[in-house]
Image 1 (tube, rainbow, N blue to C red):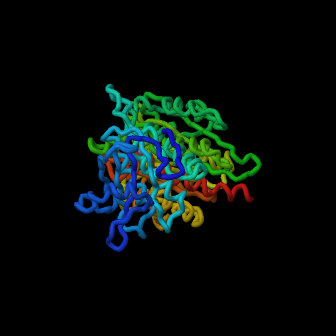
Image 2 (image 1 turned 180 degrees about the vertical axis):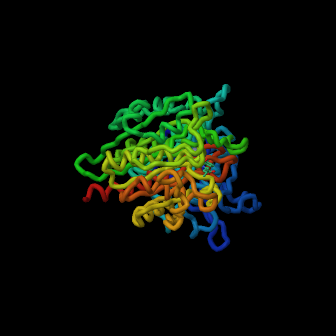
Image 3 (image 1 turned 120 degrees about the vertical axis):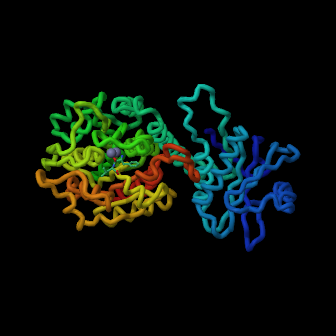
Length: 494
Ligand code: BES
Ligand code: ZN
Ligand code: ZN
């Protein structure tokens, strides 16, 4: 995407369309920019009530092509109530229309709003436009229709530069995460995922890939057990960014990388099997986030730790009632082979706790159907042993418009994981399933500040919703980038 700026409306370049914002002020339609001729061209549409400036409303006008052949009116609803999120939604609607009409270049006049800074406005506008450009076309044999390639904005160059850098890095991270999830599970195998990770090496990112033999030495018996039924060998992937080499502060992100979840011998049913290539969405988001950290050159230390394997069925599959000793030395009775995510995360978390001296750990996982039942497809579940970390993540999620909601890490349910034959078992009862899954993970993190994001609901959509496409969404990439950006100055100050 090419981005450029112009200093005043009259000096806008010739493009396929000029996008102009309107809102409602005490019931009256008002332009959120100053330009007589552009306002004039909208008058008939307004008088005929074809355009009422309500939220997400878009209308194309064909005018005398003085500068451009089309003017696109975008509605933002009540002026005082416009937020960054509403800008994302409205400009997503603009972007979707541009794709349909194959308009490849636009000039854009960002709305003037008292309640938002110029930067925040531009951020909402660009995020919305960018969100509308994604489509998964990897397996299409006919080339895609023309898509938006050039956005010219009426803003100062400095403002455009800062905001564009962030939005572009974020968008590349989202695309990477989404593509990884949307591709076939037999292409994004543990090895296949690592091949993609290798392409990120450079610019300060380092990648280490470990195989099953290394895992045997590390006693990662839970990961090895889950992967036992699969053709593909498991992998343990570590990606490092040292943006603050003089500081000891380090954030470790752990992503669940089950490249396909059949459920194992506790085989899933037809319906739930269908979407299970998404079970590495936590891993994909983690890789996307660390790529963005590199692109933004954030002055912090971040390590991504990604256990990768397939939960398959075969004669060698691990079995219900097996007892397996984890890397941490805790023995686990396998009550259900479909609760595999917490098993691979357990060994990964224990490795991180012992070897990496993290200041905080955040794991991202499509962990439980229970989280999806509780919060639906718009909201990820957030669990944490540290209030400050939970608060920072929640604040970041609000700014990003990529929702997290905190759930209780209620120790009263711990006994549901008691086993007759081992130190614990891997599932409790159906009720409270997202909580017991988190309590299982907690056994492996010790006292380190830790947050667990259960993204089973938002990771993958059966139908498009709002500005999210059908299939992989890339949640919670935007929240995580926002969180790490906010963390950056605090780390350097220490
Ligand atoms: N990968 C699933 C969770 C999931 C469900 C992800 C829906 C995305 C959408 C996980 O491994 C799983 O199968 N969990 C079981 C746990 C149960 C056996 C205790 C579940 O939630 O049903
Ligand atoms: Zn499962
Ligand atoms: Zn799973």
